[in-house]
Image (cartoon, rainbow over all chains, first blue to last red; front, side):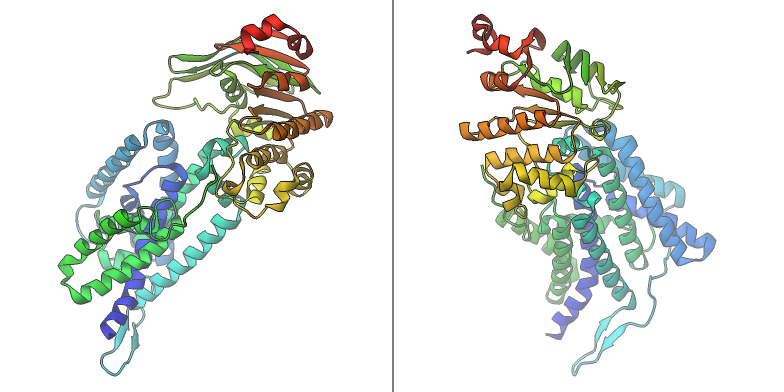
Length: 294
Length: 240
C-alpha cells in the first residue's frame, strides 16, 4: 500500500512533465493541424542555449530565461519560414517535414555540442520532503516538488489565457474554423506563429525541468516526446488540457506499474494502455462527448 | 464604394473567375446571381482576400485585378486588413465557431473593429433568439439560428460594406423572409450589401442592381427590376 502511495507521489511530477509536453504538442496540433514530432528536439535546443548561458553567466534564472526566449524565437522562425509556405500541403506531408526537423536538430546539436552528457542544476536543489510512516518513509525529491508547482502554475496561466483573453479565444476560433476566423479579421498566420512559439517555449521549460535527471544531451527529450504523445492520446488530441490530465494519469500509472512489474516493462505497459484507449475510446478518455445538431 | 476591375481567380489550372468588373455604390444592395459553380463564391473570396497566395512554395492559386474600396486599392491587403477597414464577408455555410458560445462567437466578430458592448445590443435587437441562447455553444443551434449568428457576427464588426454568400441556404421560407428583412434594414441603415444568392427571385426583389455570372464571366448587368421582368433572361440563365 505504501509503495502505491509512493508511486502516486513520484508519479505526479513525472506526469506533469508528460502533460506539459502533451500540452505543447496538442496546442500546436489543435491550432495549426500540424503534428510536431520535432517538439522534443526544439526543447532540447532551448535547453542547450540555457546551458551555455549558464556557463557564461552562472545564473540559473538568466539561463532559463534565455532558453525560453530562444524557444519563442525558434517557434516563430519555424512557423514563418517553414510551415507557413507549405501550409497548403497535406497534413501527412507536413508531418514528415517535422519528422525531418527532428533529425536535423539532433544532428545539429551533435555537431555543435557533441554527444557528451552535461549536467544541469535542478530548479530547486533543497532537501527532499520526507513523510515518516510506521513502515517506511515516503520520499519526494526537492526538484520534484518544484516540477509539480511549475506545472501547476503554467497550467493555470495557460488555462486563463486560452479561456478568457481575446487572443486565447481567437486561437480557439482559428482551430475550429479557419475561414470563419479569417472573415472576422483574425490574422490566422499570427495565431499560428503564437501557437508555435508558445508550444516550443513550453517544451523548453519541460526540458529544464527534466535536465537534472536526463542530463543535457541531444536525445534528452526523446522519451518525453513519446510520453507526451501518449498523454495526448489519453487526453484526446486537440485538447491541450486533456493532454495535461492524460500526462498525470500516465505518470502515476507508470510509477505504480513499476511497483508490480520490472522497470523494463514500463514502456510496454504504457503502449498497451495506448492501444487499449485507441480501441475502446479513440477520442481520448477525457474528451467530452459533444452533440452536434445536423 | 466598391469597384472591382478585371478580377481573376485561378485555382491552379482552374479559372473560377475570368476577369470580371463590377461596382457597389453607397446605399445599394447588389446581387451576383448564377448557377452552382459559376464563380460566385470565388468572386467574394477574391474581394475579401480569403485566397492566400503570398509566399507559398507549392501554391498555384492566383488572384489578380484591381479592388478599390473607399478610394484605396486594397488588392494587396491581407484578409484581416480588409476586415479592419470595414469590408466584411459573411461566408457560405455560416462558418461559426462550433465550440465557442454564442457570445464568444459574437465577441470574435468584433475582434479587430467594432464596439462589442454597443453592437451586441443591436445584434440582439434584430436576432432576439441569440440573446436567449448566448451561453450555449454554437453547435447546439438550429440551422436558421446558425445563420442568424453568422450574420450577427458579421455585424459586430461595424461593416462599412457587407458581403453575404448564400444567406438563405438551407433555411425555411419563413426564415428566409426574416433574413432578407434584416438585409433591407441594414440597407436602410446605410450599409451597402453585395449579395450572392442562388435564390434569384428573392434576392432580385430586394436588390437595386444585379449581375448574372456564368462559368466565371459576368454575362449580364442590369437593374434588378428589369431582370425580374425579363422572361427570356430568367429562363436562359437563372433557370426560372
